[in-house]
Image 1 (cartoon, rainbow, N blue to C red):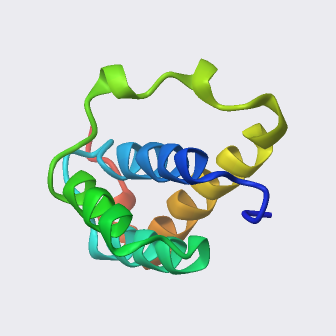
Image 2: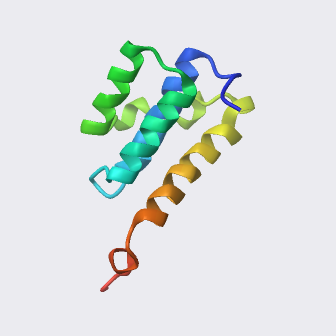
Length: 102
């Protein structure tokens, strides 16, 4: 699934995944662990891993996330990766934390 992604596409994928991790204004430990596993699967270089780590500390700038930049051939891969990150977080969050008092 990830073998067809070029280096810049792998980084774009991780930028999107990290942005979704920030939707609640903080990166949960399960989200961080998911990103680390994904970096391992993508076989990122040390330099690229360091760049992704910055996105786990400070959310990627909104202007750096253009959905039109995702190649049509890889859109499903991007959506599935983001969905997997969201699912991994939901499974590790206690039910009480997921319920709303509103």
